[in-house]
Length: 150
Length: 150
Image 1 (cartoon, rainbow over the protein chains, first blue to last red):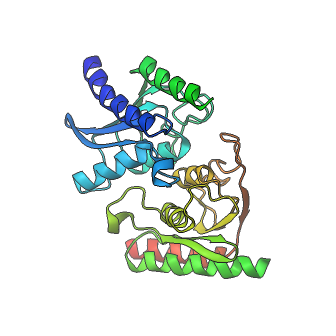
Image 2: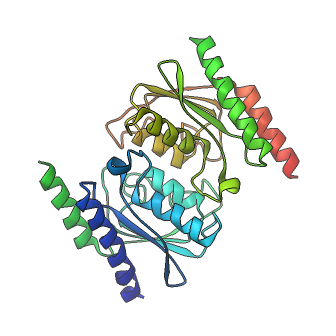
């Protein structure tokens, strides 16, 4: 199981590297259903000029199109960085069953750091949360981005 | 000023009625910049099969396209119902200056009811919040929807 998490997080990290190559905050995401990639995304806010184009939103929308339903029950979302409030809200609304993330975001994370929207009872849906998978690689990508910015 | 709020909320209510006509939870939204409509949207989750297709997300994305920038500073967002966590997060990320909403959502509202994400310091951006504009009409639309559902 740990090996499976590492395998899918590696795909999310590959997405994050695509964001970095675009000069975007390097966050990547995949949505997995029955061991297959249903959706993938990387942060494209600046590139697309779209304020909601976070990795998770793009991966969730792609998964909904591919699975032909907006209820993504039975899927696991892998994201390199703890989701922000918008993305945590989207994860709950999309009925995603499990979230695996890499590095915490102490400034705005909504998977337990600043807020806990994933496990908060604002809908009947509950999301299982696992963190720390691929943490070092995810953090290094973020550090590389912020060093380039200086 | 109150008259201006009523005028723009009427546009959001017209969007909400379009959602109701589609059999969607009737929530409507407009984003206003310098007295003009920059973006509009109504809930289209079922219609589009898109878990993130809430009124606010669609209106924000349209405003960003029309204004050709993802930072929507200087805009006011009118929405008939208090934003959920996803939409409140999107409002903050989009740097919207002010939110005017109609009816509170005690079950999941993130504009002060369940959560206060709009005024919470998870980014440096602050949103001014005004509620109760067009409240009766917004509530009646919601009641009509839930009566039809039964």
